[in-house]
Amino acid sequence: MTQSPDEAAREPLELAGSVWFKSGERTLGGASRIALLAAIHETGSITGAAKAVGMSYKAAWDAIDTMNNLAGEPLVERSTGGKGGGGTTLTRRALSLIDTFRAVEREHRKFLERAGAAIEGFAGDWAMIGRIGMKTSARNQLYGKVASILRGTVNDEVSLALPGGQIIVAVLTHESTETLGLTEGVAAFALVKASWVILLVDDGRGPVQLSARNQLRGTVSAVTRGAVNAEVSVALDATTVVTAVITNESVDQLGLAQGQPVVAAFKASSVILGVTG
Image (cartoon, rainbow, N blue to C red; front, side, top):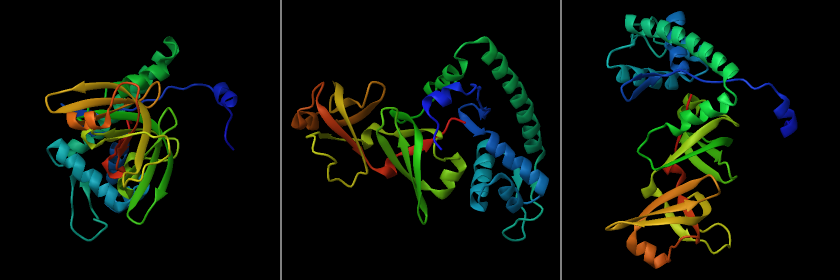
């Protein structure tokens, strides 16, 4: 049964946060990857560890390969002997990472508890600070919550509801959905490069017949011309803006100007989804 806003408001507020290990600009991993390492240590096999943390065997190995690559040294030592990989062990470096992560996580929890007790509105502000501090090469960084997940044979179709109610659809592999921990209601962000966004004049007659699954309606808020291309910002609502980079010629042909209704379109395969914790 869905809670009413009044019922949700009466529930006690709690702080939430997560710890991630970084080396320079590289993110090695957070709680889920450290849990996988700990499970490997406890079970002695990739199969057992994957089951213990709720991952598929392939997703577990993908995470291990990523951690080994980013660490610059082995954390998990492969062993021969079939799919189960019996006798798989962690290096001393990996064991040290587990201990350090758990110690830092304990202190992180204490910090959140102290800050939550001392600072009014800390939980919401802290989450927002994490989102706005994110750095990527994608111009469009759109925050929302997972509205639905449609499972396919190989890939999943994930719908992300933006604050204003419009939906972004992304196509990603089962392993990616699993690794990111995507379920209905989970907060996530969508990354879309400005060069992937196509603009169309909105005639108000409904969805345009395009192969692009995502068609977001808004109004032009700014047009910044360069020598060859122009950067066009489209306000979807009071809080969300999508930016497209198109040629100056296209701006002229479409007659784009501030306040004009347009549709920002891009393929579901062009959307990269991520989570902050």
